[in-house]
Image (cartoon, rainbow, N blue to C red):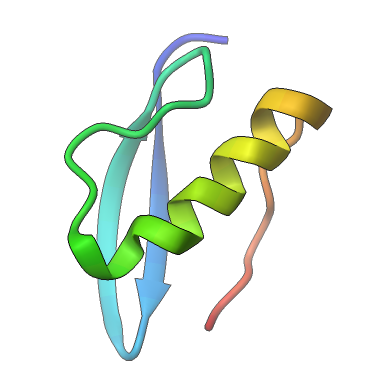
Length: 55
């Protein structure tokens, strides 16, 4: 997998973040740290990116 863009929404705000082939995000806003940690874990251990999930 090449670097991909992931759209993350939280509290009516939306961000487009880059996730690398190892499942790591770059330049994550502090309010998204926990959510991005979960997405990274799922991607790294299950080779899966979550689809449309909104919090």
